[in-house]
Amino acid sequence: MKSWPFNELQGLREKGLLRKLITTTPLGKGIVEVNGRACLDFSSNDYLGLSHHPKIKEAAKRAIDEYGVGSRASRLMSGNIRLYTELEDAVSKLKGTEAAIVFGSGYLCNLSIISTLTGPGDLVLLDRLCHASIVDGALLSRARIIRFAHNDLSSLKEILEQKRASYKKVLICMETIYSMDGDMGPVSEVLRLARQHDAMLLADEAHAVGVFGENGEGIIGQRDAPRPDIIIGTFGKALGGYGAFCATTKAFCDYLINKARGLIYSTALPPASLAANIKALELLPDLENERKGLLLCAKDLRDFLVKELGLRTSGDSQIVPLILNSVQEVLELEAFLKDRGILARAIRPPTVPKDSPRIRFSLSNAMEEKDIESLKKALRDFFKGRKKS
Ligand SMILES: Cc1ncc(COP(=O)(O)O)c(C=O)c1O
Image (cartoon, rainbow, N blue to C red; front, side, top):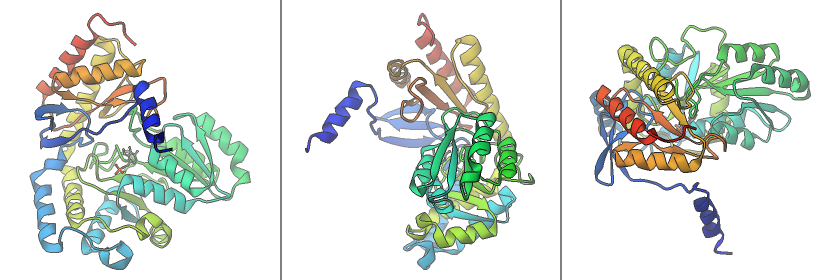
């Protein structure tokens, strides 16, 4: 009986699917130390390098001095410090919504919200590439779940036409930038279908906030109307901090305060995180050049992979996947890059479909042109003389 974890782990090891933690020390400027060696970090979501921004660090330190290191209680007890109101006001202003509510993390936010808004007798429609937190929220809700083909409006339309009438509430879930493919979700078109079929729409902007939009608001603009019922964003990616938000109506926020178990039964965010998030949002509008530079750099890397190396990638964002045929090749490339001082992690099933293991290059504005050149050189060397996927 005691040997079952070992046996399962052995099975994963044999298929090249065993996951292991590495210990890192982030040094800023897109550099991370691994085993005493400084590496270029193409595996963080710190797209704008804000995790090391001096003004954000200063704001976090001040919050510790004023409020202490922990929030000491859940929000509904005494953990709802003034910084929450400031942060939620800043989020609703950024997203142009009536209200916003902050959660502990993006995972917790999706898990809580989806399982709160839907239940038995309801239907949750998921884009096939939705993040695990969205899938898990749907599973926890005990609603019926149907997954539609990725970004496929006709597949979604057909399901709505055939199934809508059999369920009380319907919630469609999508992302505006997909985390492993880096491509955009057709949010306006999905919203139109949602409205036609009396369904709610949740759009997760985890990888869009900070990077897209005139003021870094994401793909869903500040003035867009109509808009999804629920807009999710995270502070742990381009904003460099920790936590997540849901931007929506006041009524939905009040409902979540009363019903969302991930908010009710969990300790409030640490003051330093709240203050860091407030400062990051304050800085966002001034980072237009950084956003442009980042997206240009991603386009250049994508062009390099396709045109110069004849490889397969996807997307339109700062996330540039290099899709290969086998887990073995992905692991070989990961190890090769690591030898060259480049940290870019292998993404394997079940995180991505079986037939498309990949290296996910996530770019950061903190990097310099010479860093991208080092990556290109390493890729050229690895693929020299190899049969392309
Ligand atoms: C689309 C999406 N939503 C939610 C999350 C979870 O966010 P967090 O890391 O804050 O838990 C992620 C994380 O990768 C994500 O990609």
